[in-house]
Length: 113
Image (cartoon, rainbow, N blue to C red; front, top):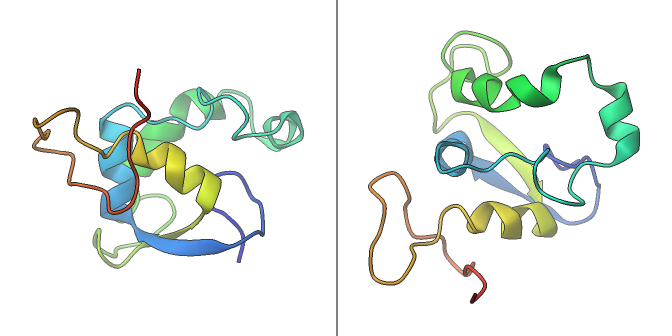
């Protein structure tokens, strides 16, 4: 399968839309993450899409855009290890505090510093 974020075909696993949305609500955007989206892929996207990406993710599964009318648990993303690690930075609690929107990510920790 192909990674839904960076389009690599190397070792992906499925994540629920709920998980991706949580990361987006907490600030994840692959176009702001160095090295996730190649210049080639950026060239294939319609003008302005990088700026609208987060909004489109938050709408998925609500009857608009990709995902149709499925709920958050029905729509899945294929995500490679590199993108999963970056997403995890927006899911992992800092210290002992856990954001209400950010469930604990299993096996992914925010780097120190």
